[in-house]
Image (tube, rainbow, N blue to C red; front, side, top):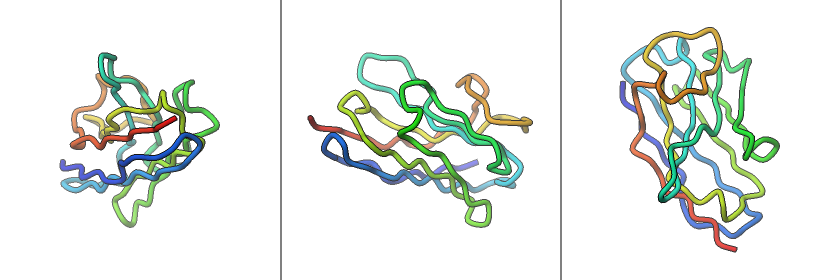
Length: 125
């Protein structure tokens, strides 16, 4: 499984960015997907997860109401729309695919076996 992420960059507080992550190597529509982030000196943090169909989503407490995860199974791509960005959102963002099929989205990073290369988001105040 290969994950190719894009969409990071520099943005002012209050701005928006959209991440994309294109997957290949297996049947994309059969697997949940997730986004994580890691800030300097901090542990990797769950940002958002989405079920294989896209019908169920979940978010970390720090991004609820501001970020939206979605997917296009026809394009084998998962997205993360980030609005109302704050300086504390500064981090490297990773898309991830789980080891096996799950009934819904998954929060634990231990359940993910495949990771994108990471894209840096910097939010200036």
